Length: 271
Image (cartoon, rainbow, N blue to C red; front, side, top):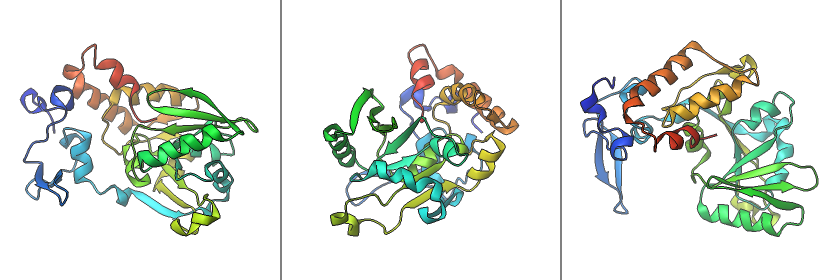
């Protein structure tokens, strides 16, 4: 547990998140980049045993929390694949909890595995007469479909695989990703024959229960706290364990949050 101020002086708000050598061993990969690997001498069992998200991510095999499949098992979502035709993007996030409850999502969050794929998609939608750029900020560029009003938010927060992205989300009801087989025929041999899906093993249970559960390290606990109120408007309530976790994360970080960091922490989490 992170209890004393001296140990917590390594926290990300102090100096960018230095990681104690007792938690991870550092090595240099084949390309000369430093990487961290779990230390056999320090096996951690609690989210609060980690100082930051990077350390937690390096120690945890999150794939054990996920189920993988294909879109043939989920006819409710395949219709949405048409919005990504010609791109290398994938959908992820809270829209799926609406879709599986027969509710039309307000927008669709689109993620990419590389900045090149993101840039190519932006160029494609910019030139497409069926779309117009609705807004842009540091996190996304959004395009609206002029035929049906659907808004696609193209994210540039991070470029990662669906598995890595879901690991960074806070609530399990958001942990669903869909990588449709929606590409032109001339390049379809480069992609899977069917669309791929990735979701938390308890995604459907928690959506049906309208229950907010956290099983990942929270790099921005104030953002998660803020989102609790957002989800409450739609009938989702945190379980007792989630309430305790959020309170503990905020308590642990309270001495490291100043007036300059606060707005960053409050609004810059993963939505």
